[in-house]
Amino acid sequence: MTEKNATSIKRLAKLVKNPNAKVIFMVGAGISTSCGIPDFRSPGTGLYDNLAKLNLPFAEAVFDIDFFEKNPEPFYTLAKELYPGNYEPSNFHYLMRLFQDKGKLHRVYTQNIDTLERAAGILPDNLVEAHGSFAKNHCIKCHKVFVQEIFEQAINEDKEFLKCVHCNGLIKPQIVFFGENLPSLFFSSWDDDCAKLGEDHIVIVAGTSLAVYPFASLPTEVPKITNRSLINLQRVGDFKNNPRKSDVIYLGSSDHAAEQLAAELGWLDDLKILTNMTTIKLQEDENRETCFTHEDKDLKLDKVADVLEKLKLDEREPEEKAGSEKGEKEKELEVQKERD
Ligand code: OAD
Ligand code: ZN
Image (cartoon, rainbow, N blue to C red; front, side, top):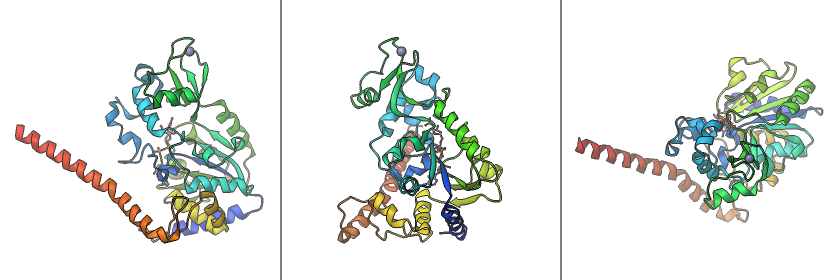
């Protein structure tokens, strides 16, 4: 861990240890990348860099309501991949749950549609899904609401695009697309919470590029007396453009931050119980941090060596794949050259 990050974790822990401390989390796709769900804007790995196969006029069209009306197919393809239930929460999700268990959680505002906050046990009253979720569907024409299962069935059984029985409009999950309003709960809840923010509150922003409004403006609206913290791979939004002296900045993986903060708070055992993890000394990463990861529930310690081997293989796979894809591209070029 870098010295700066170590200092930030200590500062954050000190704030949390205040008996009156209450935390608001504001999170995005970066807290779910370790679960296997790509984020949107990370160069190379983010969804928007990998949508070529969907034949889109521009990457964000996959979540654009006007585009969906003309061509729902790309969204169906993506939804199949992202559909909740296929993934497990991360350390960071479980850390938020721990704040709830310890009575220190005020609210979680999430932009994510993967519903992993629910899966980690964040209670409905503590959760604002700012960009909606797959929990319900609605007709984009007459706005009638339909149960979750119909969309799940449609993508699993490769059925025709869902149409409304009342008006023949297209049906889509209640995920907020570009060109649609955020749920009214987002605005009412934030108005309430923001008005209450005082010096005992801490706002922790994690795993988001703060590129999409209105969500991106929330950290800006946090009053000066309230402490803010950013846990992200790089500085973003207001933490970059209008940093405050009191901001606590951790630049790195949100899962590492979660472990380190839990350790500093004396909550590491609780975190391990929640994540049902086996602490194993995995390979030390470049920062020489020891990290742990999700394991098969019945993993025995004597199998650690096998797991390490498997992880090594898993790690090698993308590179090898990329390597072979590159090989294919090169071959293609060669063929083209020959043709020329
Ligand atoms: P982005 O992909 O825009 O940003 C993810 C941020 O998380 C980036 O700053 C990454 O550097 C950072 N990050 C990635 N992995 C991380 C890790 N392991 N630890 C810490 N940080 C990490 O995703 P969002 O900000 O969530 O809309 O995107 C906002 C909205 O744009 C989404 O809700 C989505 C999209 O269009 C809808 O789904 C409707
Ligand atoms: Zn309808």
